[in-house]
Length: 116
Image (cartoon, rainbow, N blue to C red; front, side, top):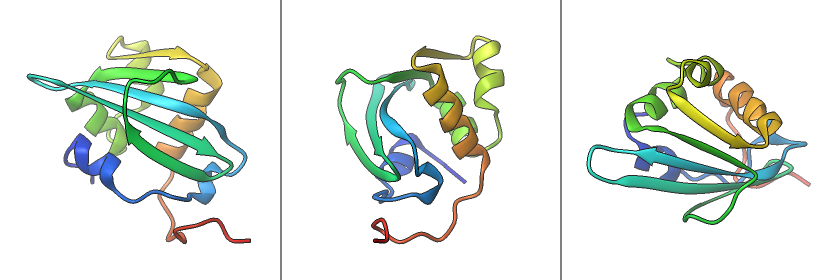
């Protein structure tokens, strides 16, 4: 279970087979009580690069820290939260749907890098 935003993004993520075929960038603008977390995730056919920063992205997702933790933990559905106005999604909605599918599926034990 995800307990905080920083731990979720600091987890080592170099390759995830659930993201094979996905190419694009996400930016997560997450509002905490007294500050903002801004993370950028670049995905290239399963290879994942996570960094802090406000650079442009194909898909921008904004929400509260509480909602992000619930979504990342699988307790809250990303699409439902968006329809309820709890989450704002801008940019590539198809990319957001791919993220939704990823968050709903259980991670597998994966190698750190894409197998050749």
